Length: 163
Image 1 (cartoon, helix red, strand yellow):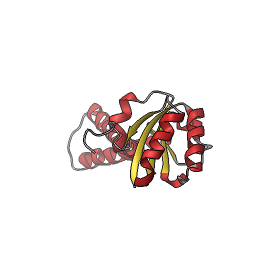
Image 2 (cartoon, one colour):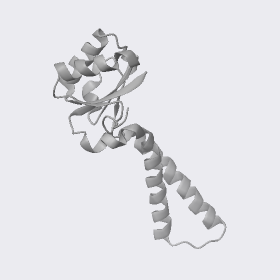
Image 3 (cartoon, one colour):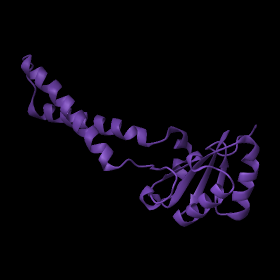
Image 4 (tube, helix red, strand yellow):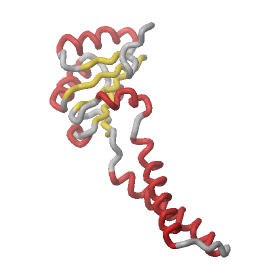
């Protein structure tokens, strides 16, 4: 089983490709999509995640980070350390920023970082787990039927120089 990476330009072509791949025998569980505009693909039967984390995931992390930093500031004040108000505020804001970044981190799939720069606003990245014996056939099917799709092969940076 190998993971195939492809960049698909737009949601309508993505829908068509998912239909074709499931007709070819790939299961819906073996296909995953990542998009900057994941909301446009919610009606598909495959898992869709976004390149950008939603505010729903960031705010709780920011609140927890700010609360943790504020607790540290209050403990320092209880121990008698004199802190100016601006330092307390900056420390609390830094805690909020750290909490937001920590909450957002899992939203960025690390294996897709090489593709992040070349994925446009409407593009969709498809990750498909394809059995070894079907890999060549699936790649040819995508390239023959949809020349606008950029098949990256089994490496997100593009086909490796040595197989």
